[in-house]
Length: 429
Ligand SMILES: NC(=O)CC[C@H](N)C(=O)O
Image 1 (spheres, protein in one colour):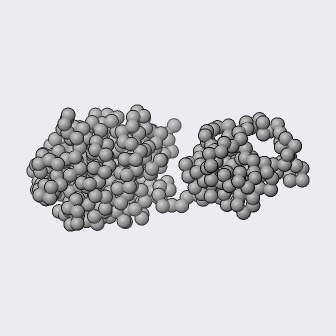
Image 2: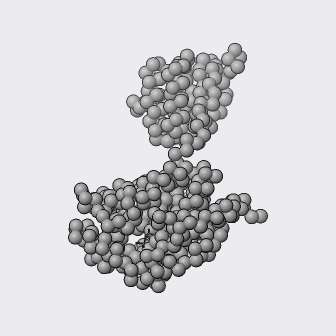
């Protein structure tokens, strides 16, 4: 049976087929000659299954979508502070190939524009292998297949690469380039000429959605922290001078390339990739943007969407006689996140338990985030200080080492112990 997800992606291709504005990149002769009507879309959730439709076998150069991955590699090589000292993270509001550095710091403004990407490429450790080989090896790990350079394309871009060379000399003159200009530009252009499909890109993006772990091989390629940092930079700078338009309409971290690809990442959920070679004035795929807008709208990808308000974590409150003593049982449920712990604490403060014995039944709780643990430890201390005896029923050990914020251990019961000792006060039912 064909997956309805594939049928849905077919519909995305169909519904955006009429978008034929823009033109293929003309400053790289090989790209100018690309078939402009090719189109493909793919998605891959953090579970690792790729759904791809359209011209899915079509290989095209990764171009600027290589920048985020090379940047993450440089961070893993040197640590974030070292890289931040050399390349900024502020959106430039300028075209991707603008000949400019931040006038105050002399640094490239961010790693997603060419100035920052050339500087970043030169920062990738190259003692054991050329930086571009390490970047290619990384792409291959991400895509689960050997990714190779289109050498004809690389030669074509090098031949017309004056602007990037100009940028590299500018960086070099301000002491901001770790290699000599022509080596850096050649390596950077080869990095941009790696050939990929939307299938590859969806896997690459889903690794970022998955916090840096390739979902199928289980291999950690970037730390969680590097991944979070990278996605933040993609959100603010990934679409160049269209970053604001993009983030308000599509609302996910993304990166485009001048061959017509765009990747987008919904953290924790999914990586998406689209391909269509005609570019808009910002150098982003025109139909690709249209596809992404539809995907975002239909699948609710926008990060700023408030979503369903978090359900209260308090399922019910019961007054019971437990072991012959009156007690109050709070039955909690779901994930304990900021909003749910806040609603519980609010309830405990507005309607303090009337009994000394207070039981928190956490049998239905899935996960307790650190913020919820801290807040509940502080709340527990207040309840103990006001004379309450606290019992936790937590068979799944969602908080294995829970104590109140004064370091006092709280009592733990099994669900059976609670069930046996319960004698529900009929007047409360
Ligand atoms: N936006 C892009 O994809 C630009 C990449 C291209 N290789 C360049 O440096 O001009």
